[in-house]
Every structure is written in structure tokens, then in C-alpha cells.
Image (cartoon, rainbow, N blue to C red; front, side, top):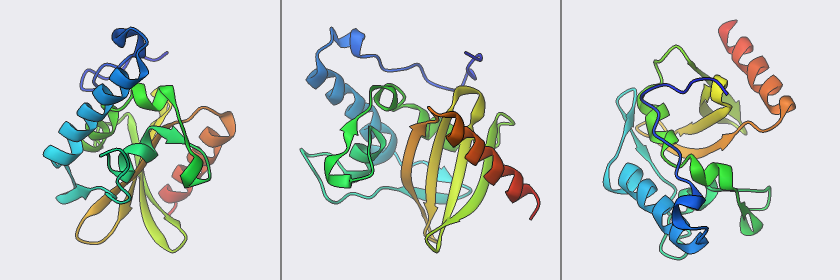
Length: 161
């Protein structure tokens, strides 16, 4: 694995909670809450906001989305790698000008999305541009070669104009 930037927080590991999933998820949420509910980062001067509803188990929709995976929102499954990296989205948003982060805008279903890709560590943060603010849409590990190829192609296309 490539050396991580010094500004990138350490992982939150399940083993640090003795394998207790409930305690682990509460700790993961505590980091998310500190970074995005209690403290509000900004991206290029725009506040970063969350999709709050539906609130499930007292936790915002964006939280559940960025710690789980699956196409069907109602049946997404928690992803340990996403959970471990819960402290990374804010750090990547705040350091998007770091040369190790590829940043570009693309369109998804008539919506402007901002992609922040820390390629060397296979991690992506997606923001939806809402005009006066950006919405933390998702964040995930680029687990598959085809995902990395797609991101690279999008990035290269964005450089051409």
C-alpha cells in the first residue's frame, strides 16, 4: 500500500472494539457526527451538507449510505472497509488541492457531481453540487479494477474540457 498522506486520519478498526459490532458502529457514527453534523466542512467556500432523511436508528441517511454498499437503498449492507475509513471523507474534502487527489466534475442523471479520488489509496468521495452548497453524496473504496479504469477515463476526459 502507498504511504498515506500525513493529513489523512487513521482507520477506525473493529478489532479496537473487541469485535463488538454495536460499539464499533457507534464509534464510527461518533466520528461522522463530529465531522459532518456538529462541524460543517466546506468545499471551495460552499458548505458541505448531508441528506438527513430518512433518519434510521437516530442516524442520518448519508451516514448509512457511506458505510454500506448495494444498489437497493433499502437493502444495503454495511461494508467494513467503508466503516474503517469514516474519518477520510472530511479530510479529503479539506485537502482536495493536494496533488495526490484527482478532482473533477461530471454529470450523473442531469446532476453535477464533484469527484475527489485519492487514487493511491483507492478511495473516492462524491459531492453533489446543489448551487449554494454541496451534498456529501457518498464515499467508497475503489475495490475493482474496472471501477478504477472508469474513474481514470472520467478524469482524463475532464482534462480535455
